[in-house]
Structures are given as structure tokens and as C-alpha cells.
Length: 633
Image (cartoon, rainbow, N blue to C red; front, side, top):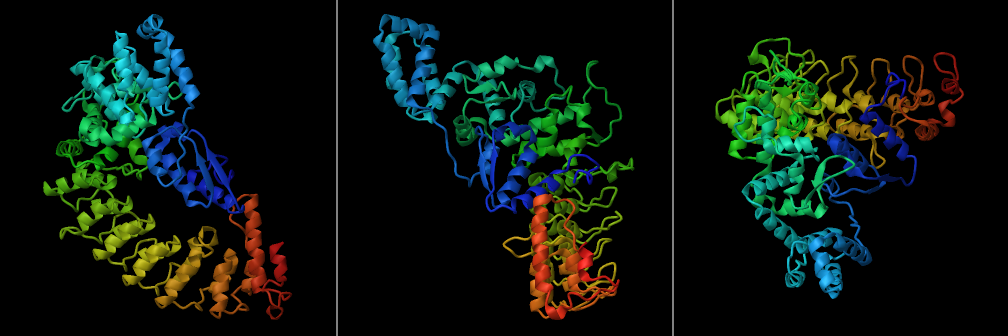
């Protein structure tokens, strides 16, 4: 693998394949991920990692502070909360009392008050330091001993009560402080990753309609924390702002709408407004951008626009989650500007749609509807269409909004476009491979999109440079899409570019390495194709049978099924080789490691045993004059 990557680091897909292969060699695999929350700046990789690990038959233990995105990804996992012992809470309270001037004076006047405070807070804290802390916070400002005793009797027994008291204290600070605190809470609670102090500083400063941002618009960073009455802290390790406790996040998840309104609408509007700053004049210390065109690099901007990295990568996800009219209009106004700036780096993971467009014709650049389709902005797309945006607009390469919606797996927009009479569901791009929306959906394994396009009448017979949608599905080992296409009338009798029967394609991308439950995709695909008329006993132009192919791939299950169907184990191809010769000469994939090689050799030994019988002539020679065993040397 090291050599395959030109002595560089393998990509995530290769590493995932390797881990899957290695772990399958063991009866039990235990994986421990410690401090998963510290990967917050790499949310895409974290999502892929958890998705891959959850797919595998392993035992997984994850430790993490509370973070909403992690909680959502692991919602079905068993959760174990770590609680403080009563003695620990007692130690905390006793240690804090001397540092609080008023409390220390009250206890000096009445020493019995200390025991009352300690006992009551230990009782009401329920083993949670966060409750002990906020209970103490509610006492330290009491100017009379009687007020302390009254407060102890009215300590909220639940966290929601504590948070409501804290919000009341924040609102008592005055309008400016209160509004700033709520903006901080909104961002900390709803941002997709923790923000640094300077990022949050910029985020809370942006107001609708702003055209530029300078230092005089920014609140002091320390103030961002102090106005929050202890609910927000600066994490010393990550240097990002977070809630003091995971229950604070849970509280704002439940109560946020009543406090903030539509948080995603606010953040989406802020992000788009911030992106629009790029077209504004910059001061001498800023980055001068002249004739920048629609695509600029993120690294060219983020040193001056400190929220740009977040705004450029997350604006669409927040916009996708809101139907708020103001947010939708703000996004549309931004995307409709002839020189709007879409940060190129933010689109890299979405397929690099810029494609280095050689045309200066703005009409051939991705339109607002293209961008809405790419990011799944359902409400933006609907509003654009209602305003008269042409649904069949094309970029320089002839790609329509429907094409991009199919590529990126946005079913709501696909359904919206397919339902229109003025959308051609079968239009091919003018790229060399001439893909249709159906073909691009199949190539990206978008099953829901494939189903929607077929229901909308997509033509399954159209060919691209890579073949039909059916050939791509088979080569990808995509059983579900293959089934849908065959049921929609796709012909299994077409041949590939080498004039071989389509059924031979099942071994090009589907083999036992990717199978589940002991059944390889190749077997399922063969059964589907046979059901729709394919001949399992067909031969390719080299006179190989499907049994030759299964043996060469080391696909025991496929070979077993084919033998049961009556395929001849003695069949000879144009090179004079039998399926047994192919099995003895097969080699494992180059990207697997030593333990996976052992598994492959076990599979090969099994298939050799399956094909070997006395009457098979194991000791006979093949067309080259060598004995079959020689081919494995």
C-alpha cells in the first residue's frame, strides 16, 4: 500500500478497507477511541470513521465530553455517565468557601453555617459537580446569613431549574450583556464544531445587512465568556469555547427555540453575510482581491476573515435546515450576484464543481439553482424555481441542477425537478463520459435517487462511455440498484466494450471481499441476472466461463453456486486453462496485509479443494505444458 501511494499516506477509503480485512481475521475485535470530542475540527473524517466502525462486527468503546454531533451519531449505543462521589462534592464545596469573601465572613460569624451549606449542596447536587458549582454561585452574592439559609432551602432539585435561574441572572445584567450572552449561547449550542474565541468574536458581531466588519465591531474576547455566568468556558487544551457541562448543551437543545428562535436561520444568514464581505473594500492590512472570479482559495481569506473557514464550509448545512423566509432570501440574493464568492476549498469535498471552467461567460458558470442542488437547499431551490429560475440551466460542461442533485444524493430536490414538465430527465452532459442523471446516481451509489429517477421515467437504455446504468451498477457490486434497474426494464443481454456478456461484469467490482453474511455480491448479482434472462453458461470471447472467473477471483461462494447450477469444472478456455488452473494461479489484492493474506490463502485452498476431483485431472498439464500446480509457484 505504501508503494501504491507513491510512498505517501493512504487515503481514508484504503485504510478503511484494510481495517475491515484485518479485523475479519479475528473472532473478536475491540476498538477504543479516547477523547473523540477532540476531533471536532475534522467533523467529516469523524463522521466517516464512526460510520465505518459501526458497520463492522466489532466491540467499540468511545470516551468523549458531550457533543451534540457525537451524541447523534451514537444514539443507539449504550451510554454510561461518570458521576462524582458525595465525598468529592463535599471536598469541592469546603475548598471553595474560603475563597468567597461574603460566605467566609458569614461562616466566621456562625461556624455551623458551613456544615449546613456543605450538607445541603451535597444533597441537591446528585453527584454532579456542575450542580454543586451553580448552587455555590447562587450563594456567593448573598449579603445576609438569612438570605444564604433561604437560598439553601430553595435550591432547584433539577438542572433545568438551575439553568433557568442562571438565565434570569444573565437577563438581569442589562440588555446589551443579555443579548450578547444569548448570541454566544446560540453559536456554542448550534455550531457544527467548537469555535475559537476570535471566530466567535466575529460570529456574534455580524448583523443582517452588514457589508464589512472591522475591529470596532468586535466585542472583547473575555467579555464573551464573562457575560455567560459560568455556562461557557474556554477549553485550555483545544482553545475553543464550549459549555461547562454536557447538560448545558442538552438544556439549550430543549429550550433553544424559545430563547433564540430559528438558530439555523440566524447562523446561515450570518455565514452568507460574512461570505459577502469578500466583495467589500479591504483596508491596507487586508487582502486585496482584484478580479477574483467566482472561486477563491480559503487560505487566501481566512487570515483576515477569521470566521471564513467556518462560514465557507458550514453555511449550506445550516441553510438546509431552515425554511425561514429571511434566511432563504439572503442565500438567494447572495447566490444570484454575478460575482458571488464560493470558496473553492469548501466545494472540494462536494466534487470540485468549479472544474477550472475555461469560459468567461457567467451564464455557463454554476447558477444559484446548481448550488442549491449540490447542497440540498430544498427551500432555496423551490423559491428560485418559483421566481422563474430556468430548471434546465447548464454549466460549461452541460451539467444541469438535476445532474448535481443526483450526484450528491439530494432526493427532495431530485423529486422537485423530476415532477416538472420542463425538465429533461435524460439529458447527457457534454463531458467525455456523457453521463445522465440516472448514470451519475448509480455511479455514486445513490439508491434513493435511482429509485426516484426511475419512478420519474428515466431511460435505462441510454449509454455513456462507461456503459449503461445497469453495467455501472453491476461493476460496482450494487445489488439494490441492479434489482431496481432490471425491474424497470434494463436489458441484461447487452455486452460490454469487449463484447463480453454483461453477466461477466459481476466479477469486475463485486467479490467475496465485500460480501456480507457469507454471501458475496457476485452471487446475488448472478441470481438477479439469471432471473431476468441471462445465461449462466455463457462464455466470453476468451471462452472463459463464469466458473473460470469465480475461481480466478477466489470467490468460493460463487464457484459453489455455479457448480450447483451445472457449470463444467473441466471447461477449457482459449489458453487451455480450466477453472482449477485459475484458482491455483489467483493472487490476493495487493492492498491487503499479512493476516488478510492468510485469509485469502484459506479461501483459495477451499476453492481448490472444491474444484479438485480425481476425474478433474489435477496432474494434467494446461495449454502451456505446465502442470496446474506450477501456476501457483
